[in-house]
Image (cartoon, rainbow, N blue to C red; front, side, top):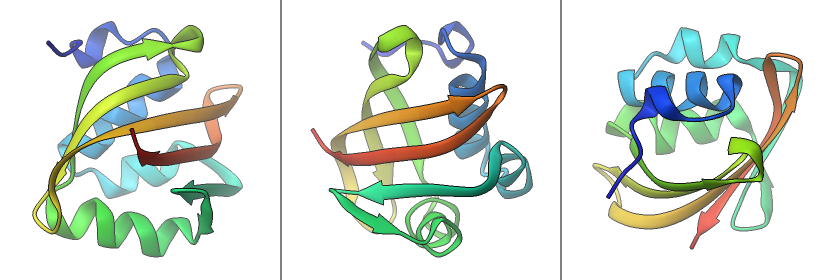
Amino acid sequence: MSIQVNRLSDPAVRAFVTAVNAHDQEGFHALLTPGATMSDDGSDRDIADWTEREIFSCNGHMDVENESDGGRALLVTYRNDTWGEMRTKWRFTVEGDKISRFETGQA
């Protein structure tokens, strides 16, 4: 059972998921602070390169199963054309209305 995106608690995280699922690359990057960082399975990655490869060029989509930590930690069924479907966890660091860091990995 997934949570509707418009019901996610944190506005910045809600906008992040909305942009990913709409394949809105410009809107996605507008949500990030200058110098934002990310990691995948514990290894820091270049956000522009990683998001192009793992989200935007391969139809990435997030179905949120659960949220915690005020909406800044998500359990997601994530799918894309490269890897298919997998359960992932996502954690967000939010500064104001922007995301300064996100971490993802297999759940």
